[in-house]
Image (tube, rainbow over all chains, first blue to last red; front, side, top):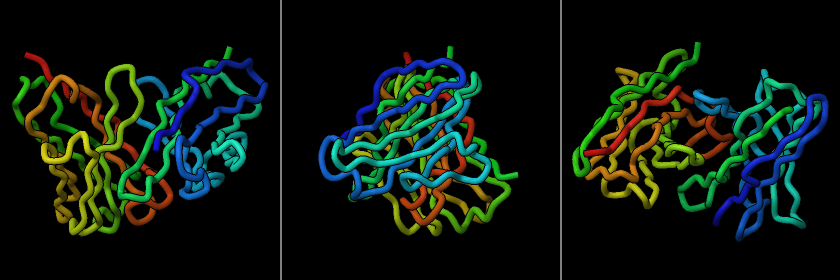
Length: 110
Length: 121
């Protein structure tokens, strides 16, 4: 299956943005979804694991969810800060010993 | 602190081989599955391969199966990616990453900064 993300999103500081990740086949609920933040020139860091769990140190402004009706996962960032400007990647397990990544979404905070 | 540091990248001619290393510190390396992920210029992340904590299980993406080999040296806290038959499509930043739980659970909770591989004549 594939995970499809919007190429880019933009929003103003203090607002809320939602980044989608649509699974092409099979149920989004079949396997957990993770989300990674990647700032320019840096390696990714995990911000959500297992659909909606936040690792320690990740602000509660970051939240994850899945929607069975649209077969998608979403990363929501509230109270946007300029430091949130980065690429965000979703990821899931395909059930056959492979990870699948989405194409990544560039978030601009302006 | 918990850290992964990749090395071994560089410029290599098409058809040649290259060996990447990933040094781990700050955690019990021998207890965790480890992955390699790459990112081609301007592209998203691509998962490549995983190895279990003891090296007994290895899995590969179709794009590198038969050309890339993952291995680990637990006493030396080192992860290895041996790459052969390289082509321009292998040009990317290569990251090593630590599995949070088992091989597939909880995602990848520690990543290195990456090492750049450029395949060019």
